[in-house]
Amino acid sequence: MGIADQAFDIAEDWDAALAALAWQVEAGADEAIGDAPVNRYELAAEAPKPVAARPAANPVAAEPMAGADPVATARAAAAQAQTLDDLRAAIAGFDLCELKKGARNTVFADGNPKARVLILGEAPGAGEDREGRPFVGRAGQLLDLMFAAIGLSRTSPDAATALYIANVLPWRPPGNRDPEPGEIAMMLPFVERHIALVDPQVIVVLGNTPLLALTGTKGILRARGNWSEALGKPLLPMTHPAYLLRTPSAKREAWADLLSLQARLRG
Ligand code: URA
Image 1 (cartoon, rainbow, N blue to C red):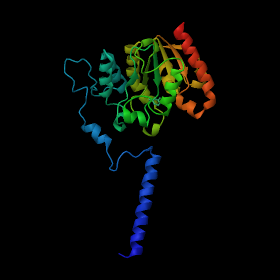
Image 2: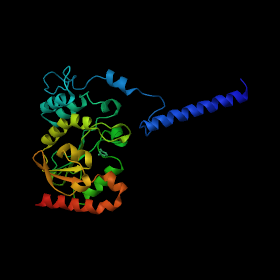
Image 3: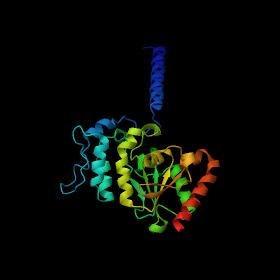
């Protein structure tokens, strides 16, 4: 093969590689995590199911019944969880949500389960998927700063000043796309059980997804700052910190919402 032919082949390889990369970006890939491709669908099929492996005495069994619908299966698994550890295992063993197959970690929660305030976000992003903890990226840093301004922190051991943080979805949607209604409906029984087990004094929902999940209504920009009720608890909708990063002018309203939360906790 002559030099010109080799140069042509290299150019062809380059074009093919670039086209493959463009396709992956289009499909939602947004970071390189290794040199060799990993088929997580195969891994998920091969992986032992954590909940099925639990001792028979443990009542948490998330094994889907043949032909059962995902929401009913999720509801049955969630209802059996008597503790947060049970619930964590039940979610990790729930195999009917496709998002799980593309995720590196199940992101359950962070913070103090005795907290008076439970914050509900949307779904893990890339950093959360990598670390297995909610709100660890830039939005999470802003969240920590915002709530620290009214004396609340996810690292506080004192229930009065603590936060507990969870998401509607425990697995990262590919490319950080919006969660689909079917995914929200399927994971909602776990969210409801999660909130019942933590039993916070108030719930703060960040953004449209948790607002829709807990109240059935949309429109966070209209709803924010207006207290309502969900699952028998006072609920405060706030704009998502990722929105505040994109729209700094909205921080003024978010501050008003934080003061409203502070007043409610003092009252
Ligand atoms: N956004 C969310 O809603 N949740 C996270 O955990 C991270 C970013």
